[in-house]
Amino acid sequence: MQAVIVEHIVKKYQVEKSEVIALKDVSFEVAKGELFGVVGPDGSGKTSLFRVLTTLLFADSGAAKIDGYDVVKDYKIIRKKLGYMPGRFSLYQDLSVEENLTFFATIFNTTIEENYDLIKEIYQQIEPFKKRRAGMLSGGMKQKLALCCALIHKPSVLILDEPTTGVDAVSRKEFWEMLQRFKRQDITILVSTPYMDEASMCDRVALLQNGQILAIDKPANINQQFSHPLWAVQASNMYELLKKLKDWQAVYSCYSFGEFYHVVMKLDATGGKEIQAYLSEQGFQNVEVKQIAANIEDSFMALMNTTHD
Image (cartoon, rainbow, N blue to C red):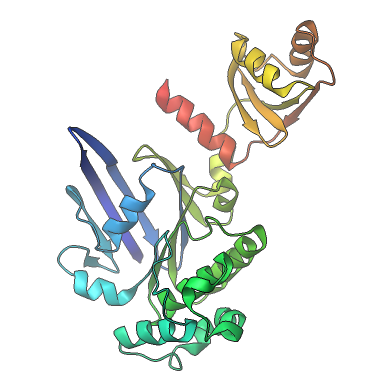
């Protein structure tokens, strides 16, 4: 059974005198119990898509269903079935941790005790601060409280909009481990993220750019579609290196990735020796060139380049 169905969604905004298309004919389906990621940079349309799915925004055209219910006609039913965690912390900052959780449980005609087993693991981490005002919590603790409030009524579908933005690396890792455990309880999870490394933790991902879906598949399958040899290149003068690589006619694409530049050549026959020789001719020292396997970010960049060509 498909828990989420999105069909040809279009959303436009009027910005001053110009029209901005935030979502361009977006379609996909999410199976019940699936952890589905929507991955893309800021401004790609992730938040607009999630606001349509959570009945907070009307699409200009297209349709969407949650557990078989239409997001426009059946919005009251959907709001009871959904758990939603927006990108910006939106709980009551003047209320304590305990008061926020009690408030959200009351809205959904339930109690903390009734669904405590679902949130127990998370709540135990913030329970020592239950009397503290939400606005005084750290980023990681705010994240955990927001997740508890989204889960307190035991939703069938959980929608999380960039939940790990601004959170430290340890909290990010813990958060994704929690999502895997929720998935095993048959909760369907849609999560958006600008972090490409988080995409590999999803069952499937939709790569979104400028309101358009570039690809939908398992992360491993998307990586397998990367068709050209990929090289990691480093040298003593990295700023000048980037300029020279982009000016070289043999280079198809080049972008920064940690301490290296990831380079795709126009001809597969152009390998490490040719790159090394070219950079030596240009006067670079301490040149390191190695062939690497593509990751989800490399695949995303390749799809973007294909779209722009």
